[in-house]
Image (cartoon, rainbow, N blue to C red; front, side):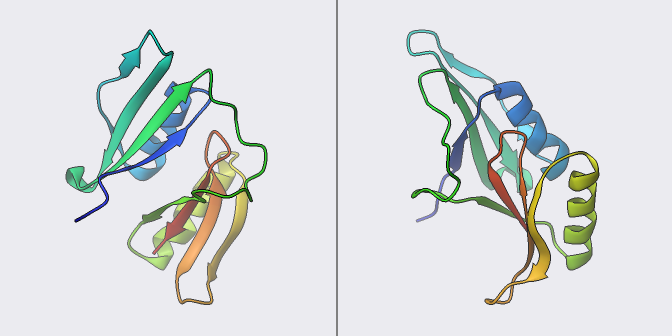
Length: 127
């Protein structure tokens, strides 16, 4: 058994997909649209297709107001090393993305930082 994919709603589908391509080497699949429901999405694949994130949009879905609400909290990317965590975090901050925490060693031993993606969703970067 394995998790097939995680999904995140965004306000701007193109901007949301571009973020994960640019900073996490994702590869965007074909755009899916359902004109009847107003839903559209892309699957972004990582690690040669072993990991997928569905970036979704629907005008009927309200944007969450509080990041501390119940439900899924973040998506985490392991970038391979502490040095790469530092480099990518610095690059994202320089490009105008908000850093929430880190880089730091957490109580459970992870070396990580957390940033907000182009839509304000939390992305954890581990090494």
